[in-house]
Image 1 (cartoon, helix red, strand yellow):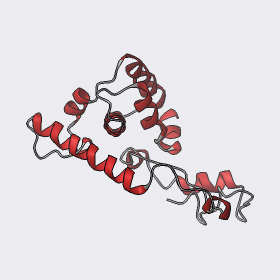
Image 2 (cartoon, one colour):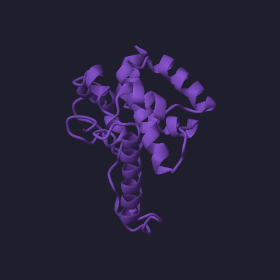
Image 3 (cartoon, one colour):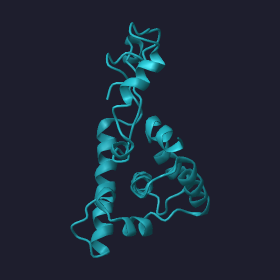
Image 4 (cartoon, one colour):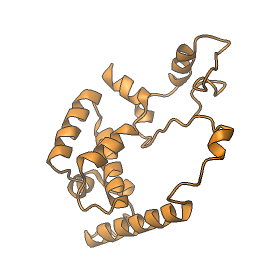
Length: 169
């Protein structure tokens, strides 16, 4: 979604005509409730692309490479759940809570981070499971057998700022 009504509040040098940028953003984003935000797994702030950005060299990993990694991770997930007797579960996102708690059990440092984040962000059960599902997917993309602190930290970083603020209040 846009950060505000006009969509430009986070653009460098932009000043909203209605009110200060921060207030405009906050007012616009209050339209989303905490329970709705709990259902959104990833939020990433993306600024406008400049002409200078367009002239940069291509990234080392191209779209075809990323697509191949994603396809491999999805195959791995489908195989994981099939071996657990859940042939209808094709991805981490579709896994039931108790199952994801087992297959995404974090290592020691990851468990510590997850406990601290759960308390600090007051994660609901849904939010907790979504973090585990996303961390397991990130670990699958890394071809890691266990979910580590790094995977959980990345998954937590994708939670929306508004969800973090609502949970902290």
